[in-house]
Image (tube, helix red, strand yellow):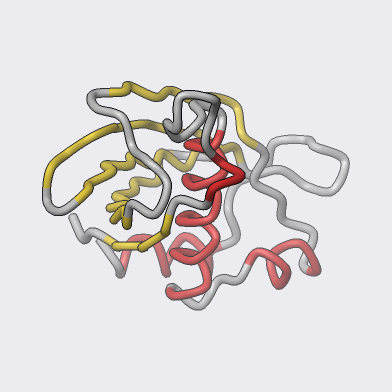
Length: 131
């Protein structure tokens, strides 16, 4: 399994009154990492959408281990697997090499009307070649 790494810096607006990265922002970071992964793989989201292929989110899980703070630089490792019409992604968030959070998202391939579809062969091939 290959791992893709994406780096983010915690912005002041993303922290709560206690100076801690707000829990809701992890979903945004996961999406940012996922979009960067897809771009790196040669499957930019906007290209998929132009082709009529969507990947709506069906599940989101986050486990918080330690807080992150303003100006922290976080590395988000993303691993993926494709099973049928579902794309499974796992995320591990590190600050200076220390794991501070982990999460998962599940996405389903759909058409523009949100009807489930099998991923097109060339898309499936990209995911399997990168594993």
